[in-house]
Image (cartoon, rainbow, N blue to C red):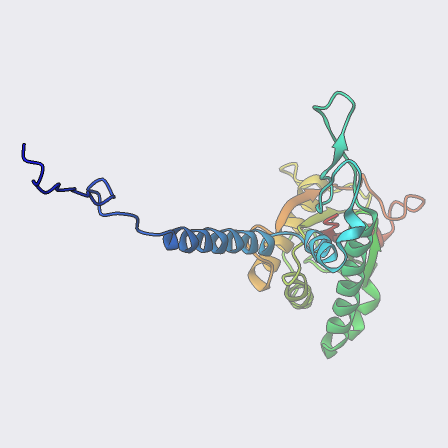
Length: 258
């Protein structure tokens, strides 16, 4: 080979023949999409929770420090406060603030309901037969009969017109709540049975069921009622006077969500 022959150096471009590097912009877009979907599903989950759970979540975002614990914990009532020494069994501990918030929601609902019933002139004469109280089980609304006045046709589960009107007002108020509702029918201790054996058990159950149908028609959400019970005379309002007409009643229980 001649000493004067030129040396040719060939340089190959990188990329391995696959078009080179495309950058990481798609990763940022994908991460934004995943974050948005997570936020969407969290919102959908929260919308379907009870008022007590919503209150707990709101309280966490207002002051996260309230929920701090050395063992780790959760925002929701009944959530794991920590682990037992075995390290496998979660310890459930309710949040007192959540119970208080649930009670406040029911207290406000009771006041709104009283105001709504007071606004209906035709129901003013019946207000002393409608009792609204907040108990440990939730908001209890009782429609009490008297010796001269009833909410049903005698010996049947047929609602009187004024009863339908009362249940319509109550349903519209309770339908705005996230709480479940239970309906109870009660009779006095007077023996009642027809020739076919239809007695107080059947009557109390059928009356509660008649109230359910009316309330679902006028305002309660589908699935909001989770129980319809007939107790006959087993849960007398005035046990000392078992024949008292006030033992005949319909109880509407808005259950505590806590």
